[in-house]
Image (cartoon, rainbow, N blue to C red; front, side, top):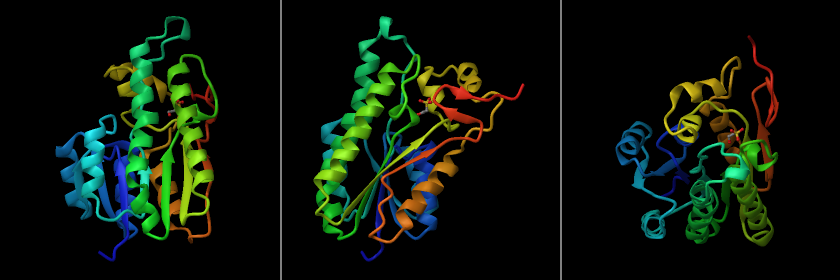
Length: 244
Ligand code: 8X3
């Protein structure tokens, strides 16, 4: 296989699916991983990629996924998410555990499993999709803030520990992006999810995908360490200007 191979996790929707399309259009063979295999197969057929079932919270699933990936030049750690906006005083530890597992341990599992192939490629790149929640705490964000701060920390450690290897490491932290993110956070409550983006033009999944595509298109000596992307009307985790 001479075509460079990108692996995108959480690729069945949102930023992951958009990144898979953008990378494929830029010449990558894209391996898309997620739990929802039916959606993945449609996407893979559209972009000439490969669909593989992946649950980043399951060791065996990650091992089987990584074993099926023959070559990996780029890993986009996109799988993640938030549940709830429960105040710390009422913290629901199951919410915390889920967020830690999918965002932090999920990123560790997949990165660890694919690192040998990324390094063997001679010019590997890991792009981890963090969040503004990794930079700034906000009310109701404790569990997600903690998970995203942890994911940012491990991404920076990876950069330090593999400095001698032909590997680049990048963290992209988006602010408000209209995807299924808020629908998941609010357990399918569409009205509540829509309110998050009321009166603003949020980022689209494609906006973030374009940043991923660009980072991955740069020459091997250029490492974009971190990038924060927000809609024009957002200037912080809790600072949003809404049109009436
Ligand atoms: C999503 C952005 O502001 O809901 O990662 O935490 S926010």
